[in-house]
Image 1: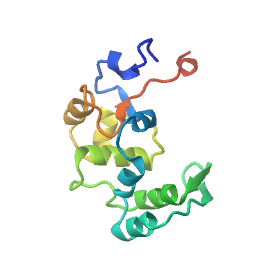
Image 2: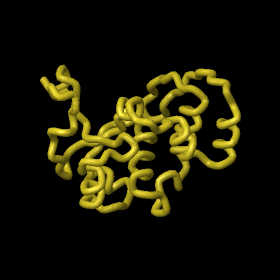
Image 3: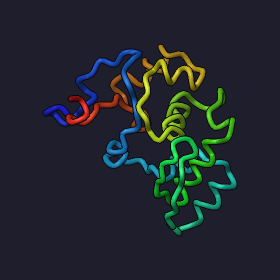
Image 4: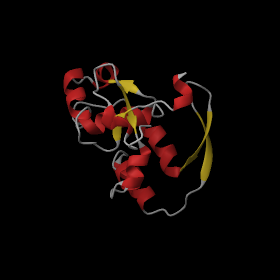
Length: 150
């Protein structure tokens, strides 16, 4: 992190700059992450979860990596929704499409080029949108922790 505490403010992103969801941004913003996450679910699931105050945690096994993760009902619903073939589609806004990519891939950082391949959108437009001064839904350039850079 920079001495100014604004890690992405010093980066001039390129098409190879990796982006991710910065959940710290959500904590500092006046936006509600849970409500935004619910908006990415099918209406019937969204309705059920929005009425539930029950936050039971379950073990979720990633089908690709076999990694076991602890997920609450919302996290599990997102993982299930992400498997649907139309989770990322041409009718979803660019920012929502990119956000959904990160939801589906466990927030693994990706470049504009990689995001373009997955979303079917232009890498130039993705870079122009996400690489500017405005932060959309917490999607920011990824700065690896100091110990990962060595």
